[in-house]
Image (cartoon, helix red, strand yellow):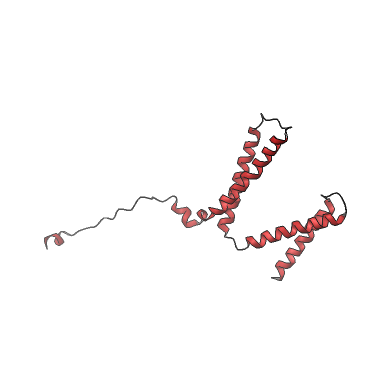
Amino acid sequence: MRGFLFVRALFAAVVVYSATLIQPIDGPLIYNVLLGLSVAALIIAAETRLRDAAVTNLLGGLLGFSLGLTIAKMLGPALFWADTASNQVRFLHCLIIDVLPYLGLVMGIRKGEWLEPSKFVSLFQDARPQKRYRILDTSVIID
């Protein structure tokens, strides 16, 4: 357990150091330190929530996210006819890139149990009911 605490503290220190080095917020250095701490805290909170998640759900979420992101990136250039200088069009582009990966992630997590090996194999098996033949000996009919 102490190893996890050390790794988390080291991760938080790296995120804070990166935020102070890059300075994404213009202003005093304390704002960047607080930004780094809050980002590190959010990521560590997400990591602790994911600790109990099933691997199939995580894999389903990852696959769904990447599929949603791929679809979003394919739809973006399809809107070439739109006026990209308009704020509404830029918002639509951002919305497509935000919403589709999120929906893929959520659907992938919910349907992640389909990726279990036993259920995955059952997709390729014959779903028709098996016929059961009975062999009768003729001596049974005579008796």
